[in-house]
Length: 127
Image (cartoon, rainbow, N blue to C red; front, side):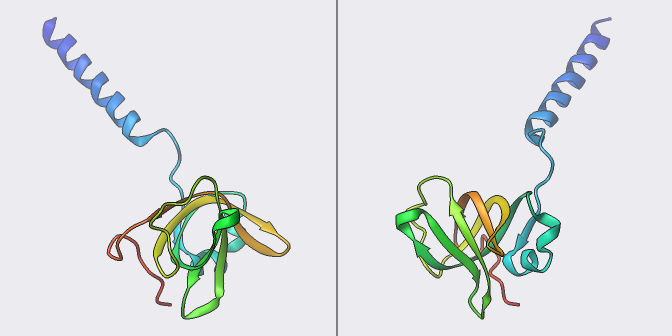
């Protein structure tokens, strides 16, 4: 009887651990700005993570433009939800997570959070 209780308790703990680490939310698409722009309608209205390089910063209204330096036409406006990280500067690789919307024919990542890191941490677009 004690053995069965121990086994059941172990299974319950394992199940709770899996649920907690999973977070209960579905996987979020993670992509580069170029690939996001290619499939723009597929992710419209969804929460996505876009990786790219900061091309322009607008500190006064917590906006930035990220994309591919080699192709300036491939860029995405990011509206940052909170105070941007202090390490956020132009030319830095970032990962911005937010909701993809369309406004005046342009794609915008709204209510975004931004993570910066060393170059080895995020892919930089070379397409």
